[in-house]
Length: 228
Image 1: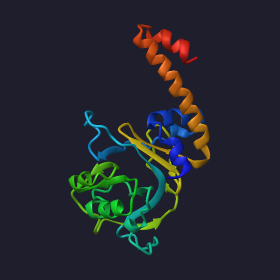
Image 2: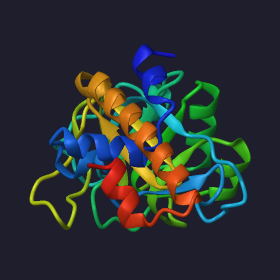
Image 3: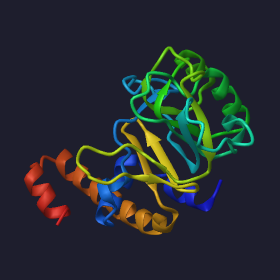
């Protein structure tokens, strides 16, 4: 486990996102509209969900009929690394999946900490049975054959544009990806120390605020006292 992963592990995606907002990162590094599908759906609130965290291994997908873009030397599933999170960027508006059960089996064998599909996937039950953390936008019954293919591995890739921003969030190889039931956030390694400090400060403030609320203090009073 890298020191950066170890430093961020105690904090939830919401804590990290709030810290990144304070640091001026657009939209707090939040990769919008991603949901947790595995180990189980985000709606299963009665179960504990492990946090997915790891350095990013990026995969850029292109349409299958793209003859100009380069091709990787190996299958992208073989590029998974132990303790890291694979981020797969699929072209927008695709009906097909670009990740499924066989690829998940390979990721699991290689010790991947999780997979983020910026697009569609399939074989949800197989992936859930493996216990591989997986976040995605949507599902599909269609495989990637004849629709999409991998082009480049470990290059900067774009997450889709957020409706509230004119710019794209870029995911770079080695960025930290943290995912839980609330969503997925991306952290630049250069900001980890500042994020940890802000998260720790916020955690202490929240603990005092919760204690005050439990004793009957009003929300307005508690916020005014502890979140000045």
